[in-house]
Image 1 (cartoon, rainbow, N blue to C red):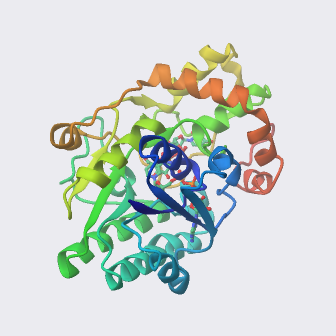
Image 2 (cartoon, rainbow, N blue to C red):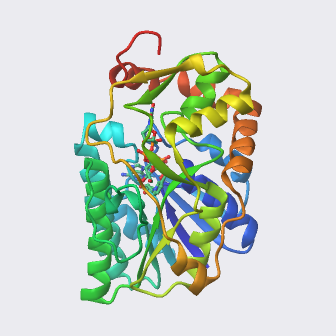
Length: 337
Ligand code: NAD
Ligand code: DAU
């Protein structure tokens, strides 16, 4: 197969490309990425010499560029490209609408023009909105997004499904819970906490710290997406989650324990506006129909992740000394963070 991966220089996209080239060494993978602040070619250094891999710097919203790539005879698009950080979407929503909604529409239109055999839209559990203390999201849960980020992802998700229903475009949608693991940009909770603790800095905890997220190790997500690509049914949505719910406070306490750091390094900060209280994924459909199940549970995955950031200090130190600093100052006000 020849596969166009968009946003492949980001966290999940780069982990997915590593997975794909290992699992299917004969596939050709083209990575189209704009290299925003979140795109990092260092994530793909070890495959840069692989003759089955190529990189193109560009924007998914550039229709002519996407047409040119499709003319190489692609069999599938997997659309990871997005602005992905909720807090940034609250500070500056415009780029989220542009890339996540309009960029996806451009990809869908070119896919339609060129009769692409497979289009996997990478969506998120955040499209469902927030849960109370019980229950889990199924694929039939109504979409009710609360942040500019999740609203832009819900739009793209629904537009992609509409292209299937209206134009018969072979679209599949995945909705995944919070990923963690190697190469995650240190603005997201876990890499931020781990790298701050490695420097004995405070870790910021929003609100009362009791918001719940459902964590999945990124390699398990890559395996699930690969299954959806090959065996999923057109027009269907697949929830992907590992059943690892945790409050943010107990997640951070788990990291403090492994890293042998004191609780006093936690600082409670102003809550995120519109902060969703709880996410939890019901992955029965992908488990029962495609036979997927996660391999890594939270405690094991946390250790692997902490170990990776410990061994790759140059990777995250380069990021934290750059553009990221300006954002950090803008988003977090209390002293000492
Ligand atoms: P990320 O921010 O780490 O990476 C996004 C990548 O997209 C970057 O490499 C960036 O340069 C690229 N990009 C941004 N705008 C682009 C554009 N206009 N054209 C081409 N490339 C562009 O994000 P991530 O955490 O790897 O998330 C990947 C996808 O998975 C996103 O669609 C996100 O909504 C979704 N998702 C993420 C999670 C999670 O926990 N991280 C969970 C569920 C779904
Ligand atoms: O659920 C899937 C989503 O998970 C993806 O669609 C998003 O792209 C991804 O960024 C992630 O969104 P979250 O908002 O859940 O992730 P984040 O790492 O930003 O925050 C996780 C939780 O931790 C959330 O409840 C907010 C809280 N938090 C976050 C940061 C950055 C803090 O308490 N302190 C922080 O400094």
